[in-house]
Image (cartoon, rainbow, N blue to C red; front, side):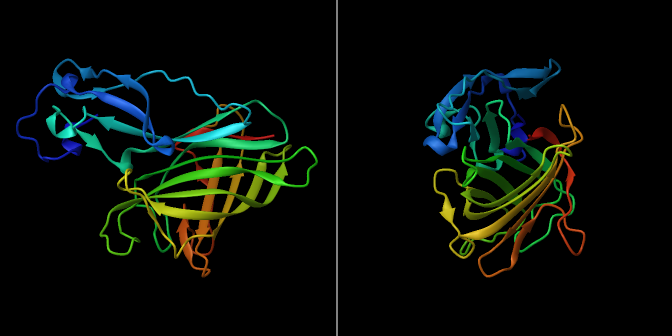
Amino acid sequence: MDPSQSPPNPDNFAGDIRNAKVKFVNRDAGNAVLCTASVGLVSMADTTVGTATCNWTASIGANDSVQFTIGVVVGDIPLSLSYYSRDHGDDNTTVTVSKSLNNFITGGGYLNLVNSSGICAGAVGSKNNFGFNVKYNKSLTNLQGNMNIIIRSSQSCTPGHSGPRVYQIKTNSMDNLTVNSSTGVATFTSKANIRDITDPYNPIPLDAVGNGTLRVTMDDNGEPGKNDTIGITMWNKAGGMWFSSRWDGTRTVEQLLGGGNLQVR
């Protein structure tokens, strides 16, 4: 937590960050509070930088796997009366909670984007968060699953708004899944929708991209996931490439996770 990331910037009258109040919220459930946390200093010599952690017990019911979009809210309500305040979609992340199953692919984490491309490429150096689970039903006749992706772009692809913006790709309509559990390689395609979540309380659907095609390739290279790779491509419904996590000039290539883990079983 760094107060220089919130207005006013620069903060010429920085106080003690331990006065801040922090809540972790579920963006997919009306910003329901999952847990609250106090702020501790990273260094006793610097009262402007701190960290906040808290425990949350996730419930996924009868589901095999669930992705959660987690937001961070700094400050009390109203935020204008708080020592420090921030509530922005740029701070969202994804958390995937899965049961231990076979014939199933799941994962979560993030990429550090270095060569993203597309109509709305991710900003260089930004995090590309993701979480997913895909499997066939018991009769192996229908694909089930979903994926949640967060992209931080330096430009705006939202009509009437300027950049930078934060976008979310969500899908639950799977088209195809190919898995080689012996090598840990998997590919799936799906229909997906995109919305602008820069303001987490007023998301904006992007109709021009809705019902586009998402393709994800991955390689599970064992535990604990530090050698796993993934590539993400999104095309709009007109066929234009809206986003590529890493583009080599002709195709999306996989890259090492910045953090997280993939499971191909």
